[in-house]
Amino acid sequence: MRPLARDAGNGVSPRRRVLAGVLALVVLAAAAVVGVRLMRDAGPLVDPPARPDQDRPGPVLLVPGYGGSRGSLLRLAERIEATGRSATVLTLVGDGTGDLSAQVDVLDEAVDAALADGAPSVDIVGYSAGGVVTGLWIARDAAAAVKARRVVTLGAPLAGTSVAGVATVVAPDACPPACRQLAPGSAEIEELARDQVGEAVPWLSVWTADDETVTPPATAAQLPGTVQVQVQQVCPGARVPHGALPTDPAVTGLVVRALSTAPLDASASGGCAQLRAAS
Image (tube, rainbow, N blue to C red):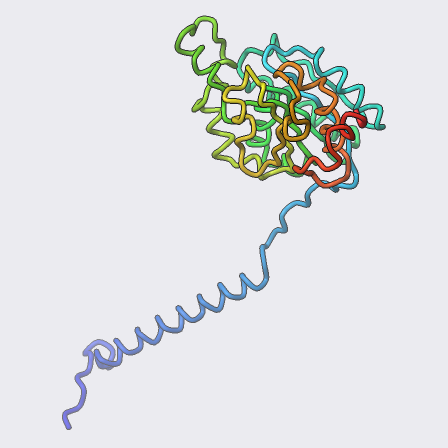
């Protein structure tokens, strides 16, 4: 039998060198598999932050809609305060028709101020465009799911509104920045969907079939992950236009219940009469 050829440099045959290399690769691969399994079994190195305690509600911040009028939300804030909660209607920058990012900054500052004062978390009620502002705040604050316990939106164009879309084409000079940002397909509306903000925080989306501002009306509920309630499903035959949402007794009852410690409920248990009585 002829002896294996030797490498003149180190006296090791080429065949043995190849075999040694293969064995080394096998050992490295096995070590990598074991390492991955150990890391997987050990779980994440950093635990995800704890969600706010649903049984320990903090203050409520109410975000006005397009135009920034606080009047429509003051009565709702008073009703919330009657339950023993603190409720503050925010004052938006300018007339509330400018860049929505400026309104997001107002909400961000109010949330941080409440937490700095010792609040365990906040609840946020966003009316109309105020709901979009709330969603953008959640999308842009990495800690929003830790800061906000619950969100309630009323007639919020969470998928945009065709009214704004038409205005951007027909009367662009009369459609300021916030108007353009509320059009379907805008960067802001796409941001809400892309960042899945409806799944970040327990969220009740209330809408009305009589909405003449958010069109089509059902788009106010088109945000995956939210609990969605149509006013007419709670109170059949009720006539509730967009502007009446913050003051309608049944809607107020829905808000008060959603801000309680009870789980969010899309079934409107108890019916219309009970909700109106709660308001």
